[in-house]
Image (cartoon, rainbow, N blue to C red; front, side):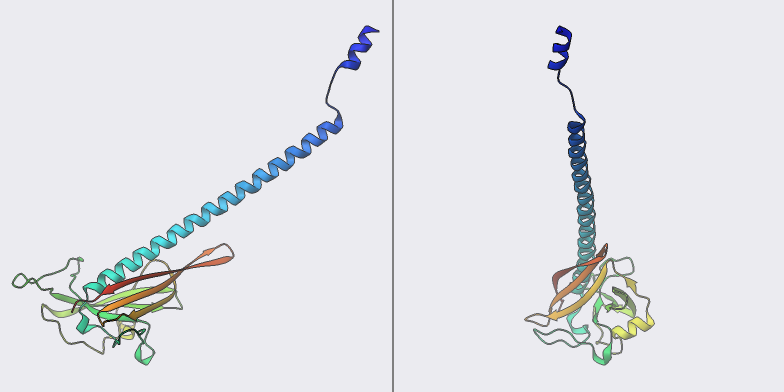
Length: 213
């Protein structure tokens, strides 16, 4: 009789309690799995955003640096203050200017007067079909500290057709160049994109440069 009473007083897990515990554990694991997947997606999206910003910084830094070294009087096409540049004849959007950098990327100065020695014409142009901004160059026959006259035959279309263009990093959706309050001030408005799964993310970037007179 005493043994029977002890067994009745003992506690244990019933099948119902075990089923409820299993159900709650399954819910907890499911929520953990969803949180893990969402965390991986956010991490991937963050990496893509960082890569996009790095591409934009590399592109804008190069364009603004070289443009600020360019000779204002040799800039193509024509500019008017507070207006967006337009390309005559349907040429690719872009611009051309003289650069004092040699083939090794070093700025050359005339030791007699410390003025830039102009080495080549540099062209940046945008190809929407490829989503790329290209850089091309054409060396001057005779580098000189006296800038040669602007050559209106060396347009963005001429560079595209006659000189190999190196694509700059990033997928570019739009590329605009606007003149500031003076003819020497340039504003660059560039939109880059990245494909994140089924959706495309676009970011707009702005920078500016001041041409050398």
